[in-house]
Length: 594
Image 1: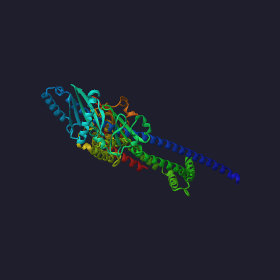
Image 2 (image 1 turned 120 degrees about the vertical axis):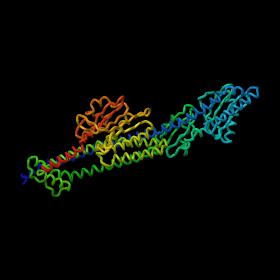
Image 3 (image 1 turned 180 degrees about the vertical axis):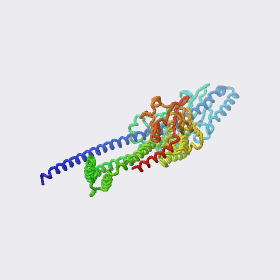
């Protein structure tokens, strides 16, 4: 018995060794996969944090630019108004003359001119003129009686300093604290007179003071770093006085952006706690840790399952494959005591030798299904980045308080997403595609008002019912916006649909033309074989989709538009529906023969 069992024992031991080696390999492979996943997740987390922070900083920077532009516009307006007083040379000279009549009329005319400069629409809150022997002044209606008294005391107490010692510069504004109220002060000197204007900081930065504290905090700082103004909410006393050299003390806890306002040497500052601004990243970290834990547990479960439920039935399957390779088509794989999946697989395998012709037909049908799958894959691959850009656009408009525009944009975006995700994933009509192209153009027009002129021209109404691959026109139009749109010039975009004959064959022709820079020369010369990865992925997908759908090349063409721009031509054979019917009849005919 031992001699007879010797060879059997040897074969069994060899197989067990092979099984152990396979288990070891699977363990190593899964271990490597876990390491790769950990690396990818950590890298993704770091990259997401950097990109999120940069996006937030860009949005804050845009808001600071708006406040700075508004601030500078008010100062420019105030300087223009003070220049008008400055240019009344005759009246300024006559203020302190001995001729009482001339001095009276000079004071009268200057007072009237000064009063017009402190109207409710003017940024100036107080304008004053020192002259030999007196002081003229006018106040805005925004200035209370208490503030007028404070300003009057301030002007009298500092008269000698202002008229003799303080430097005069038309475009230099100084920060002055008068009884707890901050003002911007400017001084002109001419004809023996000193002209002064006062602007309340509260008036200049009214919008900043009402900023929503849930979004962040804004502050106006003096040149020494002291807080002058603060937006809604309690200021963080730890940050003030602000010293830019100490930013490393706060950068781990706070997100800080500052902007120096050159005209007055004050500083505009935004700050908020990082954990509040970047709340989405905390949830992402928890999700990643959970995924890693689940992945580690799943590896152990999968390895145990493979050892008990896969390797043993796999031995029988390998034996059956070997018998079939040797020509023993009558060999039957045992099914008793095996998992349900392997029982089903064994039963199907046992039928294989008697169903060769059926398998050939199945393989042909599977090849058709694979082609359809490739088409769907190409279509789903076309614009994954579109939704990220859409979210960035909505965020940008929200920072600009464009509530109505956000509502319209989301409505159009929902129509676009429904078109992408529902209905026939492969085919649509030209009319439906043009409707959603128009919806897409309106979305872009909302983002870039006045930057695009769009027109479509359909030769015959019946062409709108022609079937075409879905998302093809949308992809080309999106390429035009990506590469041809210029916010400083209007982009012209034209879509034309007509019938076209070429070499005796009829086509439905669709032309998309813009006036941008056009396609690269390398792509124009070798478009049918072009496989660049740095650009042109969308138009390559369109080309491959038409090639798979209609089984031929040359249906997608790219050209240079005249005088400049990109011209894309899509051709749909008029006999496409007939050819599809013929293919179905051929399949039925092959099945009848089998």
